[in-house]
Image 1 (cartoon, rainbow, N blue to C red):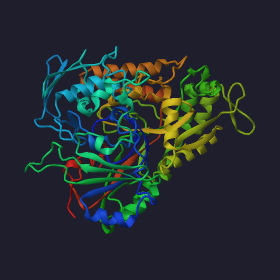
Image 2: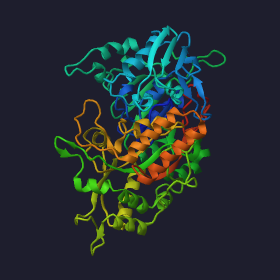
Image 3: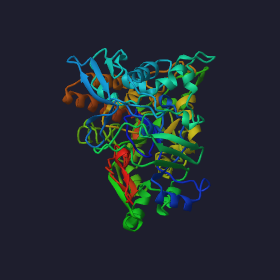
Image 4: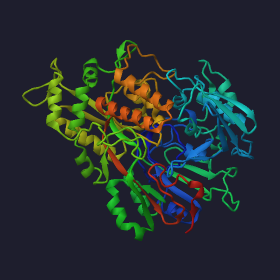
Length: 594
C-alpha cells in the first residue's frame, strides 16, 4: 500500500501508500495561465496537476503518492482495473507448476530501456534479488513477497535471456499479481547496489533522488522523465522504446507529453481547469455541482461517481516503546490510546453523516472496512461487521466504563485526574482533510476531549509518521486495490507501513519496549493464512475475520469513502474510467482528437 495523494492514476499494482492529498493545480507563480491554455490546446500533451513535489525518483524507496512511477515503469504483468484480470505486460506469457511453487515468465522479444539498451531476464533477476528481496535495501515492496508464517522470500533465477523462474517456499495465492512489481535497469543501478558508503549501506540508497538529472533516470514505461522544476512542474516525454503497439503496428502511447503542475491549493486547480489551463482535475464534492453545470459549456466530462478505492481514517500512536530512554508517546496519553474503549468512544463520537452532508456535499458513504469496496473480499455491515453510528452518549458510557470521569465543566478526565487532550495531525493544503479535522475537533469536544488539530507541511508530517514517530493522533488515508494482501505491509506487525505501532525501519534508531497486542498479531497471522489459501470461499472468510477484528479494536477509525470522480476535456478519446485505475490507467491508448 501507499500513502495516498490522488493524481494521474496509471495503476501498476504498487504497494499501498499513505494518501496525503487530492488533485491540485498550476501554481500561479510558476507560469502564466494563458500560456498553458495555448499549449494545452495546441500541443499533443496532457496537462494536469499535483499537490506536492515528488519525494524521490528511486522507485524502491518510495512510500507515497504522488510519484512518477505509474508513468515510467512496468512489471511483468498488469491487473486490469476494470475486469480484475491479469494481463501480460513485459512478460508475454507465464507458466505455473502443478505444485504452485514455480512461476516461469517469458519476456517479450526486443524489449528496450528508455536509453535503447536491451531489457532482458538479467534486469528481472537484478530487480528482485538485488533490490526488492535485498534486506540491505529498505523497501516496503519486500513485505508483499514474504511468504508463510516464517515470512520467507522467493528465489529468482535466470533461465535464459528471456525466461526467469521464481521458486516459492510454499504455495502463495497472490504471487502472480505481485509480478506486476516494476522492473528496474541493472545496467544503470547494479554497481550502486554493490558499492557501499562509509556506513556500509548500499550507495543505491542515495541514488536517483529528485536532484538527479532527468536524462539519467532510465525507465521502461510509456513515458520518461524530461524535466523537473521544484515546486513548479514535472514534465514527461513519450518513451520512444516503449514496447506497446496498436493493432496496426503504430507505436504507443499517442500523447507526446504529460505535464504535472505543482501547487499547494486545490482551489487553484479548479480555477485553472475552468480557464482551460488544465486538461483534467479531480472532482471533489465541493466542486461537483459547479462543474456538473458547466460540462457542456466547458467541453469536458465528469467520469466516475462510484465509491473510491482508498480509505480515510483517524489513528492513534499505540507504540509503547522508548528511544534513548524517552517514551515515543507520553505514558499518560499512551494509556488512553491503548484502551480499546477510548478508541471506540472516539469512533462513536464522530458524526460521519454530517461529514458526508457538509464536507462531502452528500457525495460519499460511511466507511467501515480497510478492504476496498470493489474487492471480492470486502464485507458490508450486514455481514456481522461492527459499525459506529454517531452516538455521543454511548461514547461517554464507554469512557466511564474505562475509568474516565467528567468535571463540572464537562471536561473529560482520566482516572488520575488528567484532562484528556491530544494533538491531531494531518497534511496541510487539502481542504477536504482540513475540514474533516475541524469537524472531528468539534465532535470530540462534545464528549469532553480537547483536540489540538494541526495541519503540517508534507515533509514535516511524514518525518513524524515514518522516522521520529513523534506524534499522538493522525488523520490519514491509504490507497487500495482488489487484493488485500497488497496491504501486508500495513497489517504485518513488522510491516513498513504498520504505522499505528511502527517497528523501526532499517537505519533508524532502535525502539525499546515495543509491544504487539494479541489482536494485532492475529490480524497479521490471518493475512498470512489468506495468502496460503486457494479456496476462494475460505479466503473470503479469513479476510472477513480481519475486517471484524479491525472494526472491534480500531487501529484505524474509518470515516467516509468519497465518490471518486475526475473531469477530463472532451478532446481526449479512449477514457475507460474506473475508481481503481482512474481516468488515465490506459494512458497508452488515449488519443487527442481535438
